Image (cartoon, rainbow, N blue to C red; front, side):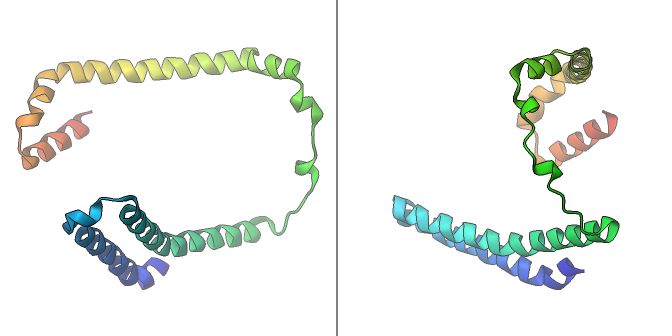
Length: 152
């Protein structure tokens, strides 16, 4: 609902930013120099903040309200207490080289290896097509990309 209300303003800000950047780039002499680039970047950053901050603030307030509705106010200092046993390097190495961490490492490496193998074998099969992609039109590239995504 928020985006529905403010989308015209957001779109207007984006269009204004694009016009500003293109008009700035149209003056090639103004592109050179630290001062001019600094002015351009400041304006771009401020405009992006103007676009993003309202959306992020609504998401943050929504998250806080949902959290409050689920569990209420939960403030505890127990999580802020310092646990010196966590700083012990010997117990840290025990946790690092425990059987569970080794099993998790083997699982992660095997998943990555399987994904790399599957991707490589598929791309090797389509190698002739991939080489010719540089000479194709945008429409044909979009069509081939769609087919490859659906097949894969």
